[in-house]
Length: 151
Image (cartoon, rainbow, N blue to C red; front, side, top):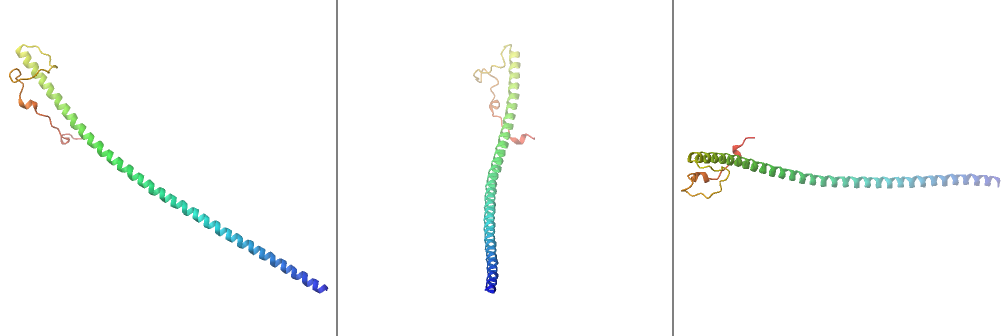
């Protein structure tokens, strides 16, 4: 009996250590499975983050393209307005010179006829008999183009 109890206690130690090894193996497998799941979730999060960033890049590129297009259109519009403005400035300058010349002619004619007349009031109706300055070339429009101006 003593020998059987010794062998039975030895076999129980083997069973205990075997069950402990099984328990350790189970824990190890469970930890491995848990680590694999965690790594899979981490890869999925990383892939989702990458996809989100790629979507954001595409959206920002679209927005940038719209802004560049808008800036280009605005620049073209600005250049057109600037050219029109230059033409208008040239016309103002030419008209001012013409007005000065006409005022000088009026002053000269007024001085030579002895009639005193304010040169700024040029609102009287003109007829060919009373106004010797009613010449057809004086009524021509002034034309200017952007080619005249150099920047």
